[in-house]
Image (cartoon, rainbow, N blue to C red; front, side):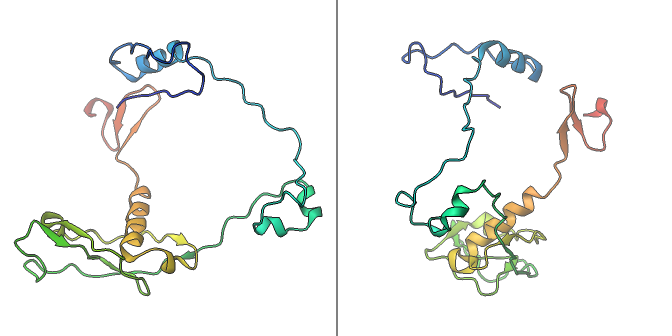
Length: 193
């Protein structure tokens, strides 16, 4: 893992990069180098009062049509957008040797483990390696909450990606960093990690 620090603070000489200290032997050393070598951040000035937008300068958006009194009032927190649970069904894996796998290097891509009723096919042809096509993906259980018109916006392959990304992010990872910077494998004694 590499740590790269990008700051908006202008460099004294933009043609010269600062020398990297070396390769850190552990996370504690890396953090000490960050504290030692990274310059202090510039202060951030936040506005102290709400800005009044004149009706002539208001953008032509939904908010542009909000009554003037509502725009002058204190800002109201935005509500979370409403969403509906994406309906899909899982399907059984195709038996080994099922038609569809050829001797080609690439195979046409299609959803293998799920079906999304009402979804549209991807507008362009998608392919995957023959090796990937020969393995059925796992059945997901994650149900994303998406805008009601999502079936008009994304293809079945794009929706499948959203489902599997959500499935992956909903999993608990098998390892975690502890306070003393040692790696602890869940269920294992620290000396076994």
